[in-house]
Length: 202
Image 1 (cartoon, rainbow, N blue to C red):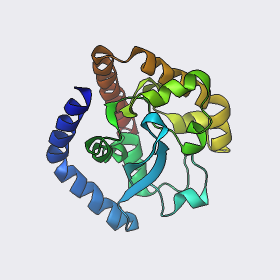
Image 2: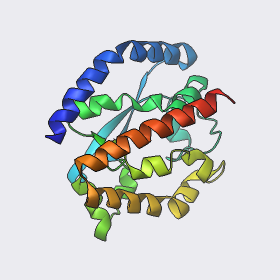
Image 3: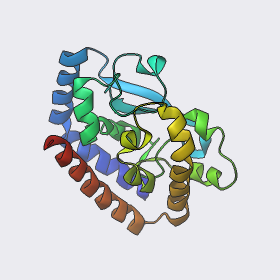
Image 4: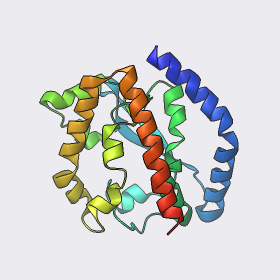
């Protein structure tokens, strides 16, 4: 039932947001050229890797220039990318992931393969639930760049964030329900709007 509802809602949102997709795509092309989308490997349901879709918010080949964690004021972020990240609009192409069945709206936020391949014990529960656009961890760490700071972002992430995020992912996997999903959906909307308004009024 959840996967069917996800598919129908993603299809509706995709049609409604089509003008937004076009505007963002043009802005990215004008600002930094092609490609418009960024695709990267993530650990998926049952541990099967998949490609996550995002609007490209960094310079081309950014993953070859720096680490996997985005630092505060990361120089790889483009002008348009900064706006997309602060408003979370870079995430909306993940509607394609929902349509192809690799993600849900609500579920453990997918992680880099170098981390999911090291999951052990309770952490393996995370991979028993389809990953999502948002969950407890993405709400808790909505300002991740500010938490990891401007230097040694990967090191800071691994030392001070990853374990806590996994605990929150496990919490979702253990308490997954329709009521939980509804609560997380509205919490995400509230936090995202708050973050976007803060950015736009600075």
